[in-house]
Amino acid sequence: MVNQVTMVAQQLQFSELVQGYWRLAEWGMTTQQRLAFLEQHLELGITTIDHADIYGGYQCETLFGEALALKPSLRQQLQIVTKCDINLCNAKYPQRRINHYDTSKLHITESVNNSLANLQIENIDLLLIHRPDVLMDADEVAAAFAELKQQGKVNHFGVSNFAPAQFDLLQSRLDQSLVTNQVEINPLNFEVAHDGTLDQLQMKRIHPMAWSCLAGGDIFTGSSDQHIRVRETLTEIAFEIGADSINQVIYAWIRCLPSKPLAIMGSGDIEHVRLAVAGLDFRLSREQFYRVWVASKGHGVP
Image (cartoon, rainbow, N blue to C red; front, side):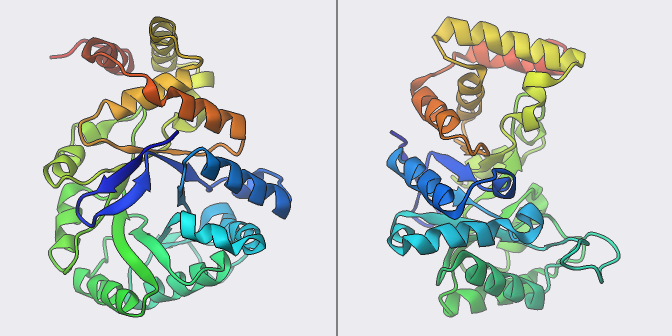
């Protein structure tokens, strides 16, 4: 069973594993099948779910909301995370000439209202700014957050893909603490462990949320020297610890990080989810952690 993790800054409870729904539109599920999947991962203890307004070309929140509407009582068991500020130029918004970011108060407010309608819920547990915006006015974002909080539309706030200075800038304007920074962490790309991002979060006792934990499948299918080294090392460690798959080793490797990231999973296959939950008891030694580090970097530690 998945443990609950307290986000110290706000005394929030999130599940140790997070179910990502960014590929929901690709899963080919009926509304009833989407509901069944939700119920199944809730039974496993995965209560935190991750969305963004843009996922599936602005479809995924709606698809999830349709399923949740079949059994609205499940809302009380969920911690719903969603994100805003990326503006896509696609069939839904053909008037846009390029993809760009928008952290204006107007856009944040409109995005939240759209997410609430699409998800068919009354409030969002955690809203994240999806990507750093060079034009972000921290005072304007703070005003948007304060208004949404006062209206009861959003309970808590955080960011995604922010550098430490960007995180601190926004935090300096807020009355309440940012809850998390959602960043990419996997054995192929863990620069946030070296650029100060995870150090800052550990200092503030904030758990990051880790996206793309399986590197979009590149760990399993990639043909570069790095891919091969990492895959072989993960396979060796899986045998050593008795893991059923290298997926379980990857999640254990991420959990070694002292900032205690919450891993976001993207699979719509409940058996893959069960496998991840079953692997939560695995622990890696420091040497095993660094064997993956060396395989990824292609050289030993300094």
